[in-house]
Image 1: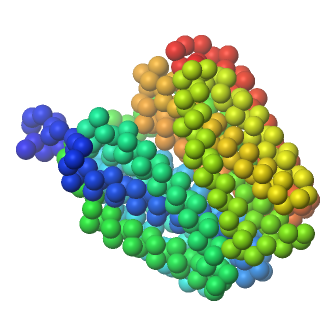
Image 2: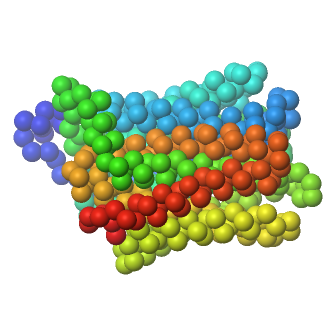
Length: 411
């Protein structure tokens, strides 16, 4: 068998196919990795009021527990993605999972606020190992006939992980406070890490990027197209607005007149299930009506949901979150596909463009989430809505401008 690091030694082995044990192991391993990574990343979002009380910090400071991790993840994407092109996907994924799980245990025992934030930043950097290599690993190691299904399972794992992290953390916080909540999520992450270590087949089809290929030159190729730059900005604005709503929303749900417990407030994240359905539906609509139509319509739906959250009744507030979530996932899903289409059109590295989109996506999350905490402290829910509305409105304006671009990707 040829060495995957020596492309001149012969043909690569075929990818894992349907019915093979290696395919089942790879699919399950990457699913569990997605579950662990996104549970760890977003668990503190359901604990923001609890963390603010425990450490006697402001709501704006409490949101840094999420923003520090997403900022670290954004930075990690720029480092671990190119690194995996050199040393391999499985090595990066295993080390990243082990590191983030160990940091999750330490975070649950953090003695001071500054220590917790530092650990969360390091944790976010380590967590970037999965989004940086997960899809690339599946595309390389699986046969083309089954890779799309496996990638769908991986995306499902990330969605379920993000949902589980928030809901489970909220429930555990009711039982024993924030340390119990983060400790439970850490235990989940450790269990998934052990399972991934045992299940994940080693790379057989990985071909390293030549060492003489400059990373900065490859990075610059993803920054040379104004349409791609616009899509990166759209990702930052849209995600910033979305996270602003959910970060400040946890404070609103636990405040009067609602006064919900962390467990009950955490249930609001079940609206993510609607978003998981909305993304593939929007993708199908984009194939028929075009991206330049679907993305602005989805953003208008997102804005309508945001406005609905201004209503006082709890039922209308939750309905607004549901509408906003459907619109967000529809817009994000189609926009991320637009990035791939545009990059391929210009013969730019699709993986590099996707990494840059994810980088700005998480930068937006860090900035928007922190601004939401400040707005909530200063002006309550209307202030948080103003921050979110600025991001969503900016994304809508960009989508309308990008819709005027020409070329096969404009649909």
